[in-house]
Image 1 (tube, rainbow, N blue to C red):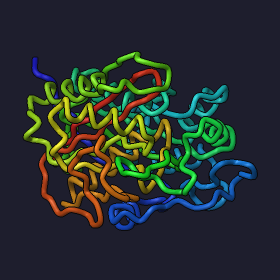
Image 2 (cartoon, rainbow, N blue to C red):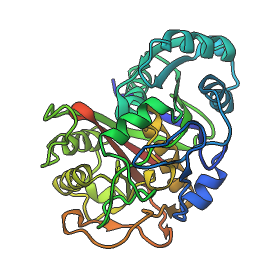
Image 3 (cartoon, rainbow, N blue to C red):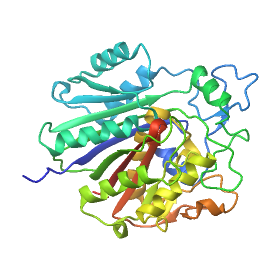
Length: 348
């Protein structure tokens, strides 16, 4: 029996651009970054003091409940929730409160695998629908910048001292963290989908605990798997929303993966360049941005670009959003430990 279709029927994302997708789509796609000095906690003595944060002191549970209620208002007892959040001893209580306040069937699984947590949840949700185990599945993810992780990445010299993320660019200095909370509703049928999830795949390379495999073979294998599931070729892909953290080794390894997959001449940008790295939630925020790109006919700018790096020879979208009415787009993520994911999205 053929797999059932997987429709994306609703999406929502909250970033430093605000609690709806309007400014992310307008300012973010134009390359205007949301980074600024951190005021949520003391950054005295840190190498950098910048991140992309929502104003005030938001609570993660409130933001998660908010995005879930944006994408699903039906009977909660019929929809399971897959949740991606930062690994923490309080996750069970967080999941229970989210379920209670939204009325969902329950949190079926909590994902904490850093940069591929949310995309792994999406892949599992899609498989549940495609194989007939569920009619609809909610996926939600959230990360709010907090002092311990900020200090960890700062001590590891991973954060950009100049307060900008410059993926694939000469002169890039590293990543910056950002608030990100998102929710996506996947269904087997729907009268007005916003997009289709046509392919998904995961691959591990186990090269190093934190360094990416330089030849990009693991990520390239994930991309090939997503294309194979969708029965598409590289020539069908009109845009890639890259992992693009802005770190020297990660960007070069990702370019190697895109080259292996035959996608180095496809338009590429990384929306982390404007909304920052939301760790476990990044993949879901980037999926929302990719859906926006498909529906708007505008490809987001790879912000912060200073000039060509020979190790990162790509067709980068720079300066202004590129007008392009595309049928399929790919969003990819890579995490510590050699975990890689690829999600292939088709226009509605």
